[in-house]
Image (cartoon, rainbow, N blue to C red; front, side, top):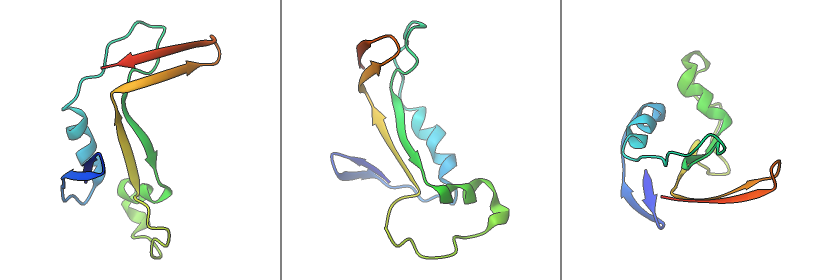
Length: 96
């Protein structure tokens, strides 16, 4: 499911969400930066512990219900990013 501003704009059925991520990512370009920046935007988020079941199929399905009702994968497309570099003591603004 793809949401924009809290509204669902796309739904895709797949047995393995890892197949959808590269296709979705290919729709966008990330800003090209010099070597001093390590992050220029793109997909940011988390993969829950149970996503290992998509990679290692021998584990089988989850043992119980998802009691906290959170997605296995949650990624955000970041097009405007503020990078705080604590090592260099700098702040960079990256805007697509």
